Amino acid sequence: MTLSPLSRSALAPTLPGHYYTDPDVFALEQERIFGRQWVYVGRAADLARPGQFLRADVGTENVIVVAGADGRLRGFLNVCRHRGATLCVEDGGNVGKALRCPYHAWTYRLDGSLVTTPNWRAIEHIDRAEYSLHPVAVDVWEGLVWVNLSPDPAPLTDQVRPQIEYRLGDYEQFARYDLGELAVGGRKEYVCAANWKLIFENFQECYHCGTIHPELCDTIPRFADPATFTQGYDAGGYEFADDHPGFTLSGSVSIPRLPRLTDDDDRRYFGMVVRPNAFLSLTPDHVIVHRFVPTAPDRTTVVCEWLFHPDVLAAGIDVTDSVELFHRVNEQDLGACEITQPNMTSRAYRDGGVLVPAEEVLITRFREWVLASLEQA
Ligand code: FES
Ligand SMILES: [Fe+2]
Image (cartoon, rainbow, N blue to C red; front, top):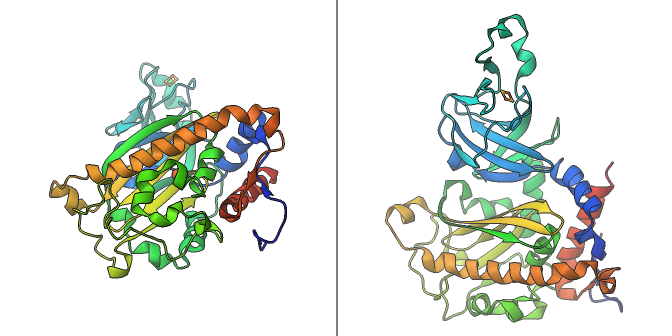
């Protein structure tokens, strides 16, 4: 579909207000979006050794991803087959050689098979294979771990690559950042009192940047220009100000650029969404990865990680100046979403709001994706 944002007299619509508040809409999203698509849950670097695990809410399920003795990552519903206790109650760590239920101590190998049922030996007489943990699909893309609750999902790359190509035109443009090789130099977690779609929509427009992001606009002056996003993202990225060579709060640079980047990328920022629950921000010397976990119609957990070349972290270079810039942006963005959320139930917003041309291409695309996903029975 071709959108002509400037050719109409009426402004394009947002979703109606109840899409951001209605528990039935939220339940349908959990089922048909987060329960069916690949969902970003964490980093492969945290699952490098046998027994390391992470735990994540995916749709209506709680899931664990565990590194096996063979190094392979496997995903399971975090539910004991005996009487349903949560197997892993921590968000991450190392379970050692086996997963042991904290209730009656049924114990599963790292491949999910039931190995012992302590205090009850008669397990010898039943078919243990019947009581393995329920598996879920796991895959890794660029060092990011994704889970899919569908029984037979399409490949992860079919979901993520077209989104990167839509943003950058050419996947190699993205591959050069070597996201999978980078390491975490900063991490912040936020609980935002807003629907996940408000946060997603916010990230897809910079119409608000001039109003709420003074530091970001000092870095990238084009973000204060309402025409910046008129045709969607700029495939060429967004250039830093002459007096602001670094993507940092101070504007200075103390980190060498990522190895495979060139002079052309040196002072450019690229932001992109990877539906359904990630944002990526590419800068010359670090990559910022956001992960979203919708926890209620009006509540979303946001995990933001700043990734740097391992040599930068090993050298002890202080990355605070980089982290602080987008941390402020996050607080500004999430604050804007929080002053919007309460009015999603207002009769003033019953039919929704409107989009100016600088917002229209990307948010309309997102809106159509939400509606199409929810329609799929
Ligand atoms: S519920 Fe897990 S061993 Fe009983
Ligand atoms: Fe913003």
